[in-house]
Amino acid sequence: MGQALRKKVVRGGVIIWLALFASESFANNGPFGIDHRWHYDNSGIWKRSYQLDLLDTMIVGEFAGGLYEGGHNRLGRTYWQAIDSSILAGASAQVLKYVFTRARPAQSNDPNKFFQGGSHYSFPSGEVAGVTSIVTPFVLEYRHEYPAIYALEALPLYDAVARMKVQGHWQSDVLAGFALGTLTGWYAHSRKHPFFLSILPGGVAVGLKKRF
Image (cartoon, rainbow, N blue to C red; front, side, top):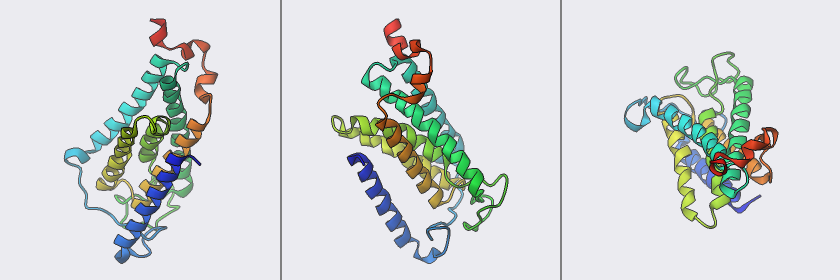
């Protein structure tokens, strides 16, 4: 396990411990006893449209960066690792949502309502997983030369808070999304040759940057 991933695991453990300590009065709420519905807030920076804009911008950005840089340099390869990671995270999160069919806070004030059937897709947070999965390969790749790259972690943190603000997810949903995105990001970064780059036509690997 890489140093950066170990740090994330430790930070995740600290967050969970703090959440457990801070939510003592919410015992037995959700799988970790930390879940409770936040007061609804869809204003300012927490607006739902901003959350969607963030994820859409990051997805467009990773594909644009991958096509522009190609796969023959460090930055381009990292873009393609992010693409691998986000696709894997998105697919995994969707499967888990169908398996657990957990009711969202907007649907029920009971965080223990799992296996509720269709339209109940709270666990895990696919958006938090998606944002985390995109930033993780960049953090892992550039953390030693540019420690400021850790500032990218503010993006999944913002998204996690925003999703709870609009009652889209419980605390354990966003923690699970963060863990899933970290795992897929680490896996994608560990591969020397990005998967989706390898199955696309060879010209894509060259990148628009070199061709023009």
